[in-house]
Image (cartoon, rainbow, N blue to C red; front, side):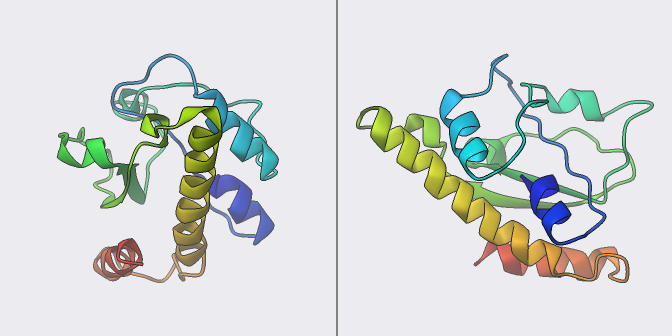
Length: 143
């Protein structure tokens, strides 16, 4: 989703998505709401964050965790010691009330994450120190 927004704003930002305990499939409601928002999901796949540690992995400037359950987990050591922040959201797949309520929960979560991503994209990432970037990301997490 961040790649999609970055392209719309002409920003040179690359984003990766992974989880601590991937299920092996992406939730169909996530695919649906992202696709409806214009995000190209054709290359999306379920993957572990372990794919981003070790040798020959992209160096990241920022690592953002979003699932409330991930806030309590020990994150791996990220090469390059990126700035880390938690933007917590309840897991929309746990929404009660049938398919329509789950679909709505995924859409609301997409919108909330998108709002914070837009704030991230307005930052002068090339000129901020890591401490300044951490401060900005912490403030965004409160919005």
